[in-house]
Length: 343
Image (cartoon, rainbow, N blue to C red; front, side):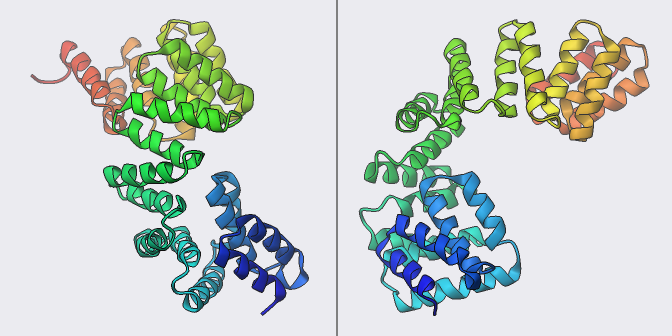
């Protein structure tokens, strides 16, 4: 066993995550550890604990992407837990390994053991709540996130996920409360501002939502999704010039942002610029061949041109791919008024 491995294991056993990160870096820099997935997994653990999900995803791709590496990490983590079966931090790491390697359901037991062995730690409750959330058990997820927040009120990732869970339930006031706390804790986190903006918009508070989206974009100007969401708010408020700019900004940040192509298509259609609209809808479909709004827009163009068969073909595709029942009803009512469907 190398000195680096020993030092990383010693750090895990006492929950010294900063030390684990530093030692894992030294391990990777050593010629013998350069191709070893274990120090990368150690950093993956730390990134997840810190809520640095982009970094965690990069590390995950380097250590848990192929079967050989997964087996190497599994042997290491299992051996560590065999030596320290009643150590809560080892249970926590085992839970993270199982969840990260595609065995979320199996991770529940070591997470539960970690919660029992580490009664003052928010981490086991946070990760266990994530498993419940992925399984669709939203109330259990909320219970876990709330316990994590109770134990560590300044743990921003738990508050963020709690806000998302509340928002998924339509409990917007509670979601907004959590997002505001996250903004206080991590004012430079663009995702916190954009989540707050989304919840405010759902609540109908458009101007505060616009301001929060703008703050998010000041922090991360290349976030195409936020540009697109801001464009949607401007469009709802009738500021079509600003909506157009925001959708174009989304495409500047990500040329493959299909929803932005669709949105620009509808703006062009509203001005009866049919060829421009057609081009935008076709670009949207190149990005996503199941884009319901693009098919809907193309159907409208064919209808305006009197090509009813082609219009019906695209209305049918729009109905197939729309998830919003109101959009489906809008199309059905329109076709019924035109006498193209039976009563």
